[in-house]
Amino acid sequence: MKTFIREKKIFCGKNYLEVDIFSLTETERKKKKKSRKRTKESLLTQRNKNDKNTRRKFIQLTEANFNNDDLHVSLTYNEECYPQNYEEACKNVDNFLRKIDRERKKRGLERLKYILVTDYAEDEEGNLIRRPHHHVLINKGLDRDLIEKKWSIGNGKNPKRLGWANAYRLQHDFNTGFHRLCEYIVRHRNKQRKYSCSTNLIRPESTTNDNKFSYRKLANFARGGLDIEKIEKMYKGWTITDKDRGFEAVYNDYTGWAVYLKLRRKQ
Image (cartoon, rainbow, N blue to C red; front, side):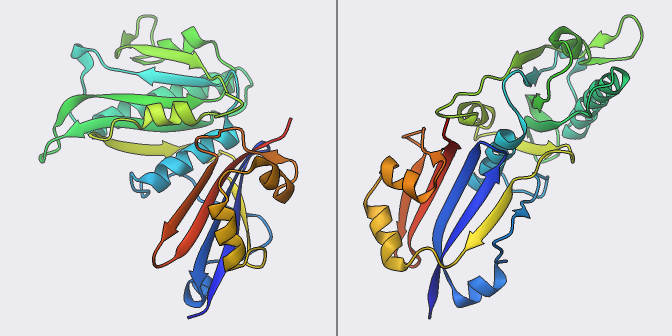
């Protein structure tokens, strides 16, 4: 069966690019959309499985939408306000996000942009068996103390705090970007996890090319390992800054070689 080598570029904002180079059969080629024009990737939704691909999409959305001085907000519960189930926890965090969005609108700021991860564990009957908590990435504009106070019940002068709320400024590392932060957020593999995001996020865009690589060229590229000079010639204006995660070559007896690149705009 005839095979093709596809190069897929995923542009995540202006400064981060992922490249997948892999083989596919004629049948797979017909099923997978081919376009040299940029097409929008899907957003992170509850339908996404909690697997490697979801974590990857989480990183891509973060890189495309957030920068230094945007915020990572961590939300926990005290004993008095401990939610009885996942649905109640969702109601609490949704109410928090609505309060933030209303405050931004009141002050003439752009609408709230967010990525939400809820970390929890429940038994077979749906009862929470481990204290849930939430991680939210949001755009800058509001004072951190004000944001933390919104993690509460009620809108009067003395709203009841649901628990601890801590807002931290994001710090983008030139070499690794937000990868370490994203890995920290999704690190607890023994827990269930739900992802969601606002619909106004910038969606990564992708292009495909089935003519750039031959099977031999891909195999030589994969076997050659990390060669930054060569990669910079292939992808002008881009470079690999993360030597641990930036180049990955994988061999499969059925599909052959695949190469995955994580590139950043040269400064």
